[in-house]
Image (cartoon, rainbow, N blue to C red):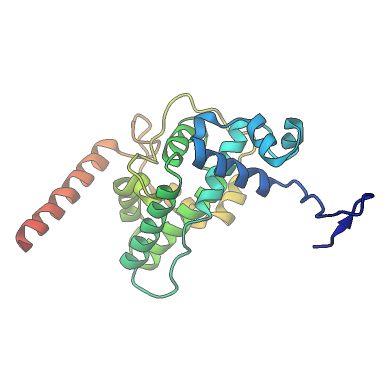
Amino acid sequence: MVEIATQAGAVTQPRVPLSRTRVLSTAVALADAGGVDALSMRRIAQALGVVPMALYKHVANKNELLDGMIDALVGEIDPPAEDGDWKTVVRQRVLSARRMLLRHPWAPEVIESRMKTRAAPTPALLEYLDSMVGIFRAGGFPIDLVHHALHVMGSRLVGFSQELFEDRPGRTPDPDALAPEVMAARFPHLTELAMAVAHDPDSVVGSGCDDQFEFEFALDLTLDGLERLLNAT
């Protein structure tokens, strides 16, 4: 970095340009230190040494800030291992997500809150989920079994326990939503999944999901796992 000499002869470092990445990383650090409830644009601006209005060039509002923070955290999850069976790769990524959440204990609340109001997950979360579907598919899972597996795992895919695929009323449409053909190209595995599931418009689990079936599937899978553990004792 080039040093800049002041009129008094002192040497200072040039100001680091403000960027979306700096805003988000500062917001994450503040949330880590004091919790997300205490986070404000004013506090972020103070930490960055800028006026609050300067932030709005990079994040339009608090909701966009929170979405960007979620995406920044998803970026901390390890990429899938290039070798290994599907079960090992999925387990490693889920545990990496869990370690990420232990570093940022405020994150589950934010993810759950934003999932209640967003029309779709954030872009980085979509990419992560798409890659996880791809791992299952590469492991030989038929698409309907992938669908059920995602419901069983829910938010465990990103390190905590909450239904990620629940369709709640009151979600506002996303004005920046990608066109279907762009979605299909960018998230091919999720698109395949969305096109393949059976449609149940009255489901409380999610549009396109049979909630009674998913409930029984998860219950049976859990009981089968307990039975396997019991037999191993």
